Image (cartoon, helix red, strand yellow):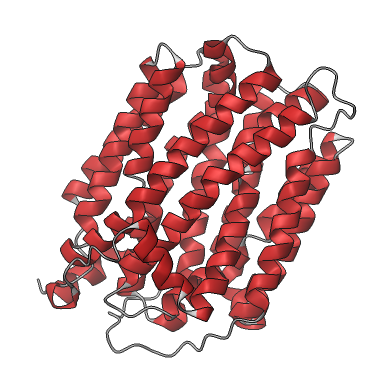
Length: 417
């Protein structure tokens, strides 16, 4: 079998299934980590939220430093070995979380996961390798849908398992990650042929070099600002969603898990079924702007929510606006050469990690400030209003972007999904 034939038979479905399993494992632990931090720290919910923010920030810090290196390595040695390395780190992370006797062990697990967090960027580079530019928005939408499917089952299952034992979801997630690793090792072929690989440039394979590459180009700079603002806004969900709804409405881990599962279901439907229709109809730039504004409205509803119905309305709007991310990824990929997809996606992931360092800290600080005893205003939804402002900036950033997408002779054609 030739290399091109092997890539064709690999199919987009292979990488999507990998992401579904990975997202399922991640979603399992989302409703569990906040109460586990409260339990191990012995602090009140408001005080423990600061430790939760620090825990997420440490993951993002390692992602910031390591993503450009992993992106450069995937351009040099191929996507497959980097993806397998990432899956190994994820498995080790969940095992540490399952047995962690104290907060330092939780931090160690998140450091390992952050250092090897190359799943999304490597998967996007894989998709770009085998997809012509004019079809990438729809394929990136499928990548987002794969994560959404994992989040449909993951948080709901995590909430149910966590009701029996807070450690059980971590063990299940570790088993899923191990299966994912074996799947990739024995089934997934390489997508980047040797003739399209390039030498590793250490001057660019670092956070500062990759940031310089992005900011020297006006289009990449504005797209990166949009991407970072969207991810900054998303930081309110893992840090404040569970805690805010617990305080406002008395939700337990099961109800919070179901709500997050609804969010994943909506995102999966939008990105799997609607992206390929919305983006061609609006165009990539207008789709990105519209998506950011719709998402902004969703966060606003979650922030002011006086009743649970507002939370679900916000979740629905946030899911509907998720098509904007696929449009931004398509424009970013179109701006990069065929031999620099890994570097560009790694740079984007690094900047995302930098944003994620700040986002949990800001979100948990806002939450703690407006929920601690003696606060002049009890307002658990404050982090979500901050997210709404970030989405407004994201819409502005992409408003002046112009990217022309033309067929690339280097792209390997694949069968229509």
